[in-house]
Amino acid sequence: MKKFIAGFIVAIFALTSSLSAANHKEDYTFKFKDLNGNKIVLNTFLEGIHFSNAKGKVVLLSFWGNQCPPCLMEMPELIELQEKYKDNFLIEAFQVQTRISDDDLRAFVKEKGINYPVINDSDPEVFKFSDYITAKTSWKGLIPFSILFDKKGNATKVYLGLKSKKEFEQDITELINK
Image 1 (cartoon, rainbow, N blue to C red):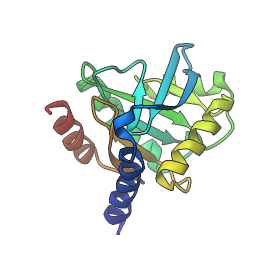
Image 2: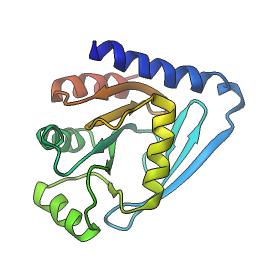
Image 3: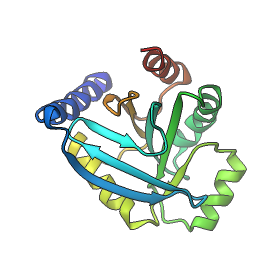
Image 4: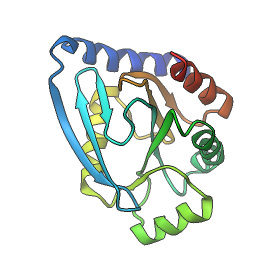
């Protein structure tokens, strides 16, 4: 049932994206700063999202929480995948579960050894972006929630709940090798 729902969500994203793919019109631009102060710009187009800091890379857009047990279980595997495929792959992570200060989240990221950009929900733009993703995918707030994008920024797969490293790696390497 979860695979059916995930497939359905990707189909909705793809359908709404492909309706006007030919005109390549920009939909929205979202600007964030990660916890290290790096600027991240996401340009959403009708066919997907272009990630300013990941041109030519496969991207896993991850919504997670610092107190979410499945998120914490998934985290070490994502860290390993980011390290292993760093030349061709990037995780963009949005902490959306609880209100936490940037300083406390920085300490959490350092403690866990997270090696990919993390954006905190203390940035008001995160709420607008979450609303955008919800509208595109019918996401209901369950975390972890991730969307995998190919090198061109097209959404290819949606993951609801805890996923294994094996499942992520299979999908990531398939897109890297395309």
